[in-house]
Image (cartoon, rainbow, N blue to C red; front, side):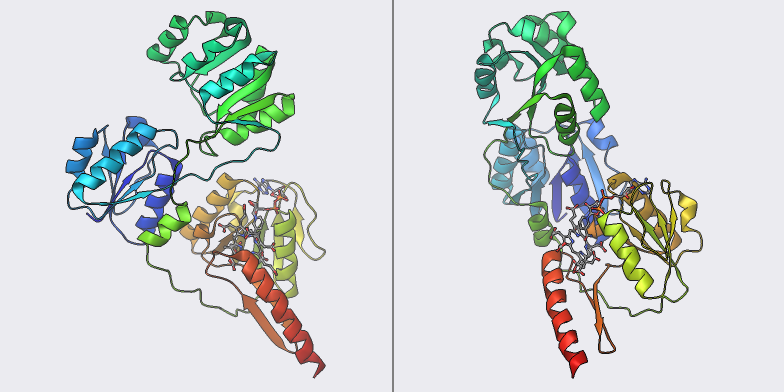
Length: 391
Ligand SMILES: C[C@@]1(CC(=O)O)C2=NC(=C\c3[nH]c(c(CCC(=O)O)c3CC(=O)O)Cc3[nH]c(c(CC(=O)O)c3CCC(=O)O)/C=C3\N/C(=C\2)[C@@H](CCC(=O)O)[C@]3(C)CC(=O)O)/[C@H]1CCC(=O)O
Ligand SMILES: NC(=O)c1ccc[n+]([C@@H]2O[C@H](COP(=O)([O-])OP(=O)(O)OC[C@H]3O[C@@H](n4cnc5c(N)ncnc54)[C@H](O)[C@@H]3O)[C@@H](O)[C@H]2O)c1
């Protein structure tokens, strides 16, 4: 086996999807049954379930070329074990790091202890969403039993930790995520929290829903930053493991009278609808909000699968990842060209930057990695066409 991915995170899962799509084989290691459940069945990807120590990992990695450590950003010990096992097994180690979040207006602290020190100088109730392992640090906060509301997993062990540390039962929130913005808001109201403490767990860890709730409820955020760690972005890992895909072929297709569907009508959808109209397409826009350009038919509602009936091409440009993904999946099943505005992996065609003039039609895309460059080059090409039409 060439590649082993220590996964259990959404980044690990995405990498497995990319490898599978490129026809590569790999083993994805997950520690728990839960980790296994969230791993979809992917051609070429075998899932290994079960916790391993460094020695077992070294055994497992013998003969493997590359191990990708895509474990949780706060799982420091696991990462150390993987690094050590790679050294023993003579296997290349790549650490895939989740991008860090900078939150405007939040108090950034390096660790749980620093969060507790900061809280000691403040007043008001605190919703603690940092799990149970580091809860002991927070007993340093004066009146912690009255001020703090820990939210921990409804597991025997977590409950025991809370009890031992002296947190009153009335303040314990025993729940398993995912937590929506609404649920976070309800918990902030219930506890009367003026502060919310969280780790920088990224999108997959429910951070956006916590931040949105805190903002809505006027609750300040203390963000425990990631442990300092060197590593690679998901894009860098992808480039190291996968061969460069060939560039996309520009297909200059006749759109007159063809039905094109634009889902979502924000800045992106509205612009794309307008471009497609210019090329003579019959444009159907489906979006509850926004203003479709004149000439398009606008259905003011959410997307429904039968919107795809009789459609030639689709652009999925809603602000909802789950909806865009659903549209992409349905289009692939139906063999309809689809461009998904928030995920270049989910594009069977790229929506190009288009410029016309002097009887020329130019469509421009990059390899998918630099949209700003595409926009810049398209502006320059626009100038060339302008000059051409003067001559
Ligand atoms: C050419 C153009 C046509 C058009 O949109 O009409 C276009 N993007 C343009 C500009 C642009 N797009 C973005 C920025 C902000 C800066 C930045 O992030 O770099 C800027 C710059 C700006 O606005 O100046 C953000 C962005 N774009 C995509 C993602 C998701 C991802 O990469 O996964 C994200 C992050 C979104 C997020 O954060 O959520 C994805 C795609 N954008 C594509 C097309 C497809 C590939 C073509 C290519 O790569 O060349 C592709 C793959 C899929 C598709 O949509 O078909 C248009 C130039 C129009 C013109 O000048 O006429
Ligand atoms: N490809 C690009 O060039 C590019 C550039 C910037 C942003 N983006 C991405 O594109 C997406 C759209 O960006 P935007 O700025 O236009 O967003 P926006 O928030 O302005 O608009 C979102 C639109 O989606 C609609 N919508 C939401 N749920 C829907 C559903 N279930 N069915 C149909 N419509 C639904 C809304 O009514 C709205 O019209 C975002 O995901 C953004 O990250 C892409």
